[in-house]
Image (cartoon, rainbow, N blue to C red; front, side, top):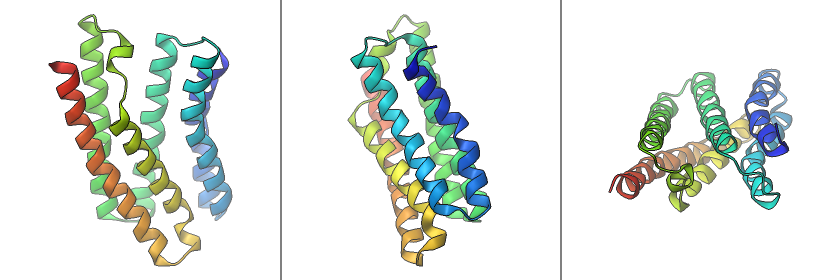
Length: 175
């Protein structure tokens, strides 16, 4: 397994210390590990392209790691903060992620190349808002309520962008 693929796998493994450290009130340390794990999403693809290590397995590992990382944290934080609003956003985001994955799988079975069904700018923007919102949520216990509200606003915006990007993917991939 090459280094970019290890970075993808590490993103999933790092969920455990993020949650454990948050649970014992090490909010900043939890957030720093979250930031590092989020950066591996950029790093794995960058290093794979730079070192000519791109592969179908690497692309799929990256997608799987992204989905697991975001979904597990969203579910856990929804219950941790006891927020119906966050829970609804989480359900919408996760259902979109599952839908995109199944559409990609369907298209691959129809002989499309994985590179043809990669994310575009709206998907990357969605991910940026999601990660920023989740990061703020992890430190919201240390700050006034406006950090919590900002994190919910960012996650809500990422929910809207999620479904917009899904619609744009369908238009691009199915046509």
